Image (cartoon, rainbow, N blue to C red):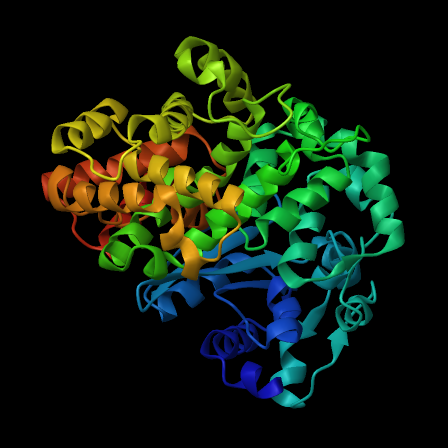
Length: 480
């Protein structure tokens, strides 16, 4: 473990800079946590220094030919941004609050994120002396998520969603007191800004094992808090003889979506690269297309309100205006744009029409073209959601997917889309997630404007590389 730190160029650079400025520097937060969990440091480092953080951040950025800017002037927090092999890397530098490391660490969310390492101990003593006032090391050893203080969730209720995300991401369990606090303060989530709620919720949806994550949210009563419409599909004590009750179908569909996106080469080998690029695109600040599909599938189940089993003939799908009235309040609540709202609605309408539109394996070219022209956008999204829904009903593995009645139809349409209808899809120079990482922005309108600015500049020929796009958004961000 210590060799990984000693041989890390960025950490060595920060130590040298701390020496030059006669200050102490500490590595804290996620890097220390991940060092224990998976023996890696990641690309986002977090440092605390006993002096002024600004010059250290500036010098660090200059060392790696990057850029630096202020994240929070009041807290003296600065970000250095660098690029390595086409990947963005960030290093945050903050001045110690009240020059008290313990106070800073104890103000963090969970014990596993509240551990620090003094760089001087690493490079001078060649030893790891963990500063662990909240006993996070013990929780790491026990695979446990615990709040740092009893008021942690009350002071920032969005941390409740983070607790669920971390537990599922690292396969940890929530300790009893933290689970009790989640039940106690869960309703306070609704007092938080919905932009932050949305961000955390979609991070949960972007993780593997999504059906388990949804079950966690449902078990703690969080899902119906954020999506009260889910009351219509929740498990109940009422005996249900259906093979696939709605809630079970929702979880199966989410699981099938994850399987398809994770095994895209198995499902569509001819177009795997293009599909991977497409579903990694940002449809809106920080939300990838693939993640939006999970959200859409959840809403697709909501459309079956009052049904005893999954049905592909729900009359709601034949009435676009009714569907819009159902979906728009949800997308507004989650601060999603009108464009994203239209995308979701289009996918839901087209997905449920697909089996009846193409009952035969032989699809005339005129029908293929008309179907895609009518969708006017999320064609691939529609096909993947339809396939996931069908796979959820059939419970087949990726290796057995070709046996599905709908697979041949979807495969034919995917081939036609790439070979005849549209051509290749490519990733933008920067996606919304990278923009938020660089400028420390929350999902919202500004991210969308910066994405459009990059696309416009690329079309005009004024930029063509990732580095040029970075300079553009940094300069734009510094003008605000």
